[in-house]
Each structure stands twice: as structure tokens, then as C-alpha cells.
Image (cartoon, rainbow over all chains, first blue to last red; front, side, top):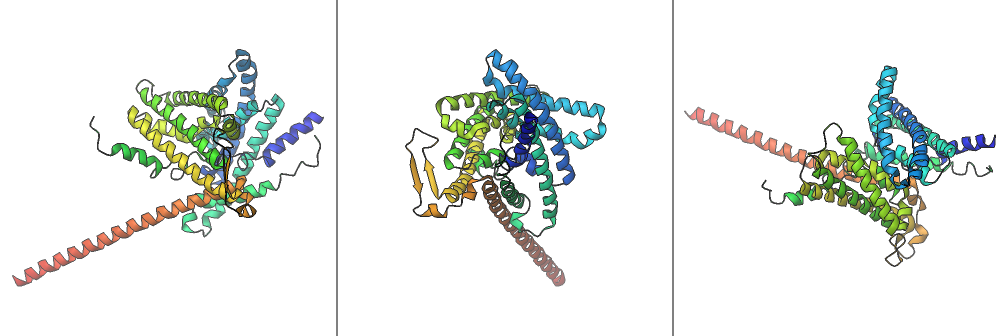
Length: 199
Length: 245
């Protein structure tokens, strides 16, 4: 039971307290680029959740059971990026074949994920910190859900911002970044969430 | 092939000003926010980034006729990832403080859109020397814009600058404005401060761009008015001539 509870707590911790975008700065490019509409940000968020969880499940065993026994753990970055790039292609083909409707909504975001640093950042961080498989999985699930939550909330705010009367120089990205700063301050308030709980 | 005079200089400068990767094209934002807590970390990140960009641009430019068009993106990514791994190992061996400060962001140079973007847009189409200069300009431009963000963040967040913590070969020096420590706003050292500083810097860039566009539009309008007036005067003169006849 305690393993289960710590699994859930690790997910919530990497989702809200140590949020991927607002405190670890992974995936800023899609966060700013694909958040103009709520629908597209939802599509991007779900695609990222999909790819991060799959990439975590594949890259951790590759590092532990292939690279380390072979004595080449320094090749991790090269291996991961190849796995992620081919995984993204494969997921794209798979969805296209079995669910054309889903492909229509997610398809255009899939190629963008290859260069999303959230995926490589999570996978690399998992093995750099020497996490166990369960913790790595919790980190992957929590991080990707955190990305989904933040990008959807952010896009909802940005839709309102479009019609707001902002100074001309601040139109577009600058005011979006200031908004992100305020969101980051709000998320800082969650930092003491687990201070009373003993793991 | 004959080279135009001053072309190399232009090629170098475009990465710093007109096509600045961070402030104009808004690429590579993740390290720009994460590694600009102190000026020293920003300089370190900029140097590592420039080395990777230089090596990958030169190699890709050398191999541009050998790599088939269909698989060029995976090929570029493997080349970039190899150089990143080399840089990572060198940093870990010779500058362990820099390695631990930047952490995973050294590996993340692989997915930095600028490196792949330059490979795709420039190195795959141009010669080795031009690609080298292009990479140098882009690298210096990126480093300078990282330093700009770090300058404000460290100054406002701690009241001064500290050197020698990451580059341990220089002695530890603290340049703190006397009395400014008391007024340091620690918010600027947190992630939220990074977003605020980057947002304001981008707004200033947009302001300058808007001013330039307005000035150009104004000049164009003046020129148009002048031309219309001249045409009118000409027509009037012609009519006057016709009247005389």
C-alpha cells in the first residue's frame, strides 16, 4: 500500500509542485507556440502525455539492460533521441491506421514532439538521477499531466488576452510570458503541499 | 565563385541583430529561461551551445551532398547528438561545476530548435566557410542574448554579480553594489522572474521593431505624397502649355 501511495504522491509532486513548464522550463516552445487555441493546446497536451509515457517505458529498460551492460552509458543521449524520433513516427503511423479521427486532431502535433525538450528532458533526467523504474514512470506520468494541465489553462487565458486592450509592444508573446510568470508565482504557492506528510 | 565584398561580415552580423535566434526568431527558449540565473551560467551555456552549433554546421555542410534528402532530419539529429555527447563528456571532465549547474540542459542542446534549424535552413545549402560564419554569428548572438537576460536577473535578484563559482579557474570575485543587497528582489532568481524578464525584453524588441516599421511607413507615405504632388505639378504644367497653344 505504501508503494502505491508514494507512487501517487510522486505523480502529484512532479505534476504540480515541480511543474514541467513553470519551474523546470521544459517544453517552452510548444507552450508558447501551440497555445493560441484551447482545442489545439488540448491536442498537443494529450499527444505529449502519450509520447512521454511510452518513451519512459522504452528508454529506461534500454539504458539499464542494454547500455549499462554494454559499457556505453555515455551514449544515452544519442540512443534516447533516436528512440523518441522513431517512436513519434511509429505512433503517428499507428494512430493513422486505427483511428483516423484521432489522427486528424493529433497528427499535426506529433512531428513537433520530436523537438519538444520535455520528452528528452524527462527521459534523460530519469536515468541521470538513477531513479527506479516505478519512480521513473511516476515522473513521466506526473510531468506529462502537468504539461497538459498548464498548457490548457494557459491557452484559456490567452484566448481572453486576444481581446484585451494591451499596449502595442506587449501584444502577442510578451504579455503571454508575463501571464506565464504570474502562473509560475501561483504554482510556487503549492510548494509546501507535502511538508506535513511523511513518506 | 566570386565573393561580394563585406558579405562575410554581413553573414556574421545577421545572427547577432536581424535574425537573432532568441530575441527575433524566438527559438531555443528553454535554456534561455533555465540557465540565466547567473551571468556566469549564461556565458557557459552560450559557449557550449556555440561549440555544438559550429561543429554540427561545419560537418553537415561538408556532408550535404552525401546525405540523401529523405533521411536528412534523422541524420542531422544523430550528428548533433554526437557532438552534444562529446561536449558533455569534456565539460564533465574539465569543468564539473559547470556540468552540475547546467545539468540536463547540456543534453537538451540536441533538441534545441536553433541547431536543427540552422542545419536545415543554412548548412544543408551553403558551403563550409559560409556555414562556419553563420554558426559563429548565431552562436554569438544567442550567447549575447542569454547574457542580457542573466544580467538583469542576477543584478535585480542578488544586487550584483558573482564570478568564479562556476569557472573555478578564475578567483572568486563578488561585484556587489554597496547596499544593494538589502533591496535585492529574490523573485528574479525564481522561474517566475525568468518569465517576467524575458517578456519585458521581448516587449522592448517589439517596440523597437514597431518604431522602425512606423518610420518606414511614414517615409513611404511622404515619398508617395511627394510623387503625387510632382505628377500634379507636371500635369498642371502640361495643361498650361496646352492652354498657351
